[in-house]
Length: 338
Image (cartoon, rainbow, N blue to C red; front, side, top):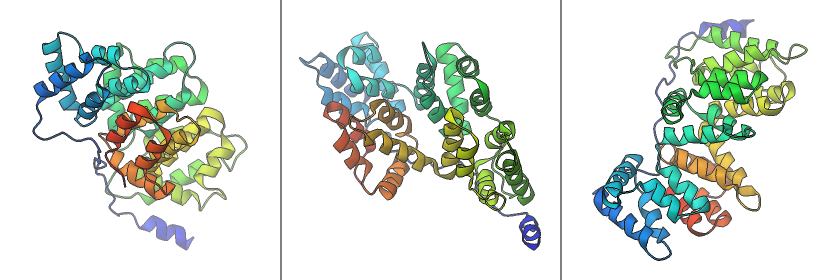
């Protein structure tokens, strides 16, 4: 009892309400000349056999805003759209990667989401990765771009493509109702949430998934980190073990992804990259998606986590598991060896 009252008594303690600092590997180049870049790309596309190296050198080492300016100059000069020209000149994984770079991070994420739901069947793995690993700010941007690009609401498409508690969780995340991090730690609320998670799961027969969804989708990340710590004083299992015991399938994967991202988002991406390159023949779609979507956000931090947990650098791992021009493009986005 004394421990609980001591715990509840410490009602004010500051923790960061700051957004994560950006740690990109791709930054704006100095002395930028979009006209010169556009002319070089035009020549590279027109040359016999296509000069992929020049295209890679330019597009993987310019920021999104700079690539946009190059595209504008290219269209003025060549009288055609740069993305269409790249599509005609390149193929396979390199083409997918370069076309991805021609979009902003939010546009790329929106188009990946759309592709995961379009046509027959749904790619749940992409849905889970996208919606469970993005911050509130990122999700708001993605929703806005989705609406502009596809003239549809992402919520509607998710609701039409998924069902049950899995759909409920994804829709709760997309509604972006997460609390802002506070400078005051509310120990009473942490204790209540930890107990609620325990009572809604491990303590009872069957799982009250609705309670889990509302806590996981509405509380701030620093608050949830403390809730998971506190949870251990109620449950014989930690939160991840509890999830594995209580739910299965896509819902289990989603909750686990959320917890991993709350604990260390960059480590989650590092592990995804590692898994994508573990098997013979790298899962190139996963590689492309993470490298393109994170290179202007936090890829530098992901690189650090990769080296720390997988004992070799991301750069070396990419070099070993990919080949050709696609490999060159990925290594350039990676931005160096650790």
